[in-house]
Image (cartoon, rainbow, N blue to C red; front, side, top):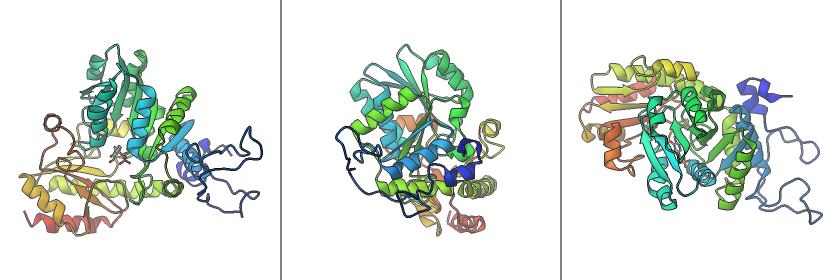
Length: 389
Ligand SMILES: Cc1ncc(COP(=O)(O)O)c(C=O)c1O
């Protein structure tokens, strides 16, 4: 069966897995292989290709293959965390003197790595507003090796035209990386748009239940795959068998979860936009979003992260975030339960104030991850909390 040609949900259920009547009891799910090492009969090579669990593990392989199929990638690798995937990739691809161009609004942990860790290894970073591809081209120097993108970004939900940026990068022989955590392969496949490498925090929608920390890298170039695999084994940021299993299980329901997340988010974003207590709503699914047309062109959904600014300041933002009944005040996103947080003081606390001010991350900004609760219950929760301000 060539799964690449099957539908998304069929692939998410079946790819990477097949019932093994010879080596198992006929399990219909891949077992959690806990062994840290694998015995062999002869010195030269292990019987089934596995030698030591940092180098590879069958539960992990099943997840890697499934996610690669869903992203239309030839190769997939999973990691101990999203940041583990990102840092391994950066160390594999860069050397001292190299330069990265980053979208000016990125997840705070990615910025911390680019601002506070990579310079120690002689790697420079320039941020630019990738909503305008011309600014990316202007930022290219002779040392530029990677253009690092999110679309939408975290937390401002800005988009960039991936096809245009990929073609600029190709002209200059620069690699493009897209962190596809917010969209997931269900809504967007950056490799199909000409992007070289996709990364994920599988902690989010792919795991989907707020019970793992994980990451992934997907790509088509075999030489790059070998290089990143070498670095993964050398650095060691590998996922545990149990986390690999939970991520694998999460992928099987990704399509149905993303449909409901997306539908509820559209309803809540429209509700918030009409509310007089709200200053501004950032959500690519709103007609008022400056890149609504681009969102429709390069993805098949808008995702379920809504960022908004409440009229007033920190006091009003805290009143909302701390008093919702159904929604937990917590970092992270993408789980079945709705989460809310204040990027200025939480996920983006480590980003220098001047960088936050420059892109518009303010104290009255709130990021909401729409879960799978009944949407009308979530709206009632907001109705109640808005009475407090
Ligand atoms: C877009 C994005 N990328 C990467 C990460 C980092 O992933 P992890 O927390 O799994 O290391 C996050 C975490 O919030 C994120 O939101």
